[in-house]
Image (cartoon, rainbow, N blue to C red; front, side, top):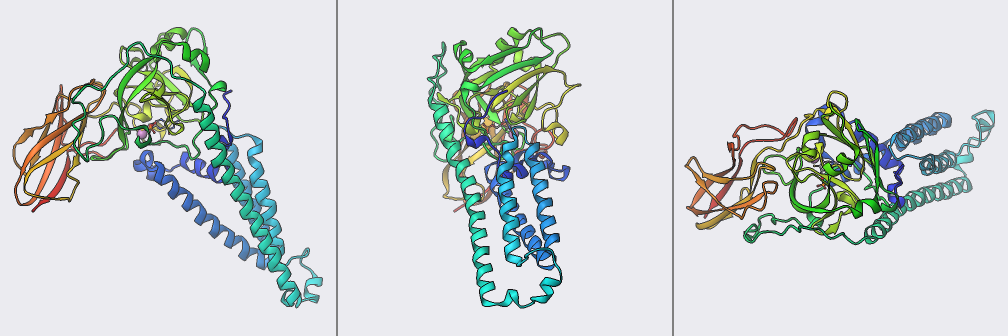
Length: 490
Ligand SMILES: Nc1nc2c(c(=O)[nH]1)N[C@H]1C(S)=C(S)[C@@H](COP(=O)(O)O)O[C@H]1N2
Ligand SMILES: [Mo]
């Protein structure tokens, strides 16, 4: 088993409940679910959990005031539910229950003191009705209650601090322990690929700005020394490759634009980078793929899975077991130490981060994480384009205005981009230099802007023609339709 280094890999009860919630996201949320759990939405989920916790605490308190046993029973029930969530997480160990147990003890203790219960309700309480009202009693209870609350806050604070600090330390250590191997054929950005237009997404997106999408509430912090990747399933021999062995393999570089299926038309859930890794097909060759297999189910250390067509991992494209992004070890958020990168497919069926296993199998037998949640089993990227400048609803001055953005048709290649103003003819935009069919291209159209309000639409062209005008939502297999903006010219 792979081990998770650092405290950051240990799910807190809150993360466990949140994670269990994410995994059980009901169908009515499915349309937005893949995108929903981007970085901001995780904060929203935490706030939601906090509000629910406060409300539940109030309920526990109200019940306990009437009958201590009822309040205590609800508290215990909540702890049991949370414990079940903790233990349902893929990386859970029994020690993960410790914070919950502590919380339960402190919670019950606080409840005890705050309700003034001395024991089972009985004639003794009736005999001393004024006990709670005596000055000494109140101040003692307030003191004890405040003390209990302080302990509770302290426990939570320590737990949060431990996760944050421990995780950061573990990641920093792990990412500093290796020097990237040399590659035989480094990939460079061709001159003119980046048109240098202000406001347009950089041709190579810096790692820190790269979009992040995953179901992980706590970023797994993996010690490469204990990491390994297993190849299982329909293979002649199961193979296990550890970190040290992986680093001895001949590494390749490839420029690939990664893309999320939940990206809306005009959305920014995509990014282009140079990835360094060992071709997946080499590892599959070592294992020996058996006839009849048509899918590789890649599994993350946190339980996420992606179902990738076997041929996209064995043909001559640059499908990589990637260890670096733009010449740097992967960031923890982007899969450190190892992730998959497959040109031409949306991330949910291919780009598994914190990679732990490749199971050679069939689409008939296995499904990736998102498939039973309403997303297509197959996820080839749709040809599309986006206007980055001007921004939608912007005001510009009359004269020549640079309308510009990016266009992508991963593994087919962009051959043109066209712009339409109002209901006019489609005009060819100027393209940035072609780097590879797997990367997006920047484009610019010098628009002679005249005063008034105008709509501007863009469409990408690949070898099969212009991108479709038919509008489709992200689910089940990617949004489509022309990105269109409105601008006011003064
Ligand atoms: N372990 C894991 N890997 C994952 C995911 C995930 O939820 N868990 N999400 C996938 C999806 S939907 C996308 S779009 C890409 C995003 O990769 P990035 O966060 O590095 O941009 O990661 C893929 N790999
Ligand atoms: Mo995605």
